[in-house]
Length: 132
Image: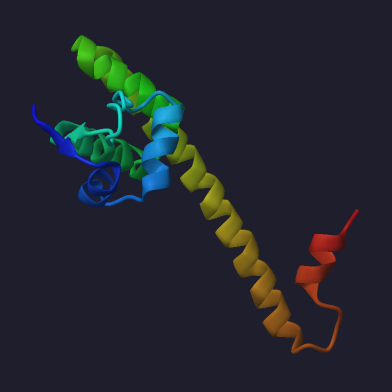
């Protein structure tokens, strides 16, 4: 694959900023090409695809450590392990959704209590927050 992108063009092509590219390099998620004497590092269009893949995985809730593991599994053609990581992430998301639903219910109850007393009594929301 041709190496024709500067870091700025790579970032633009991938829809991120330059610091994101550098951060991914420090994390070992992205290769940092050698800098030729008196020149600029050049990146392939494949690197832009890799950056977009990292961003998509993050959007699905994967941490950068998990993304690194997924990228390593991709090169090893390990579909079963990849499926296991994705299923574990689904389980975690399901738990978080249950936690968020519980938080939503509690906050809803507190708001209704606030509305019911018409502001006459101490605020039930503040009471819950400052309770020892």
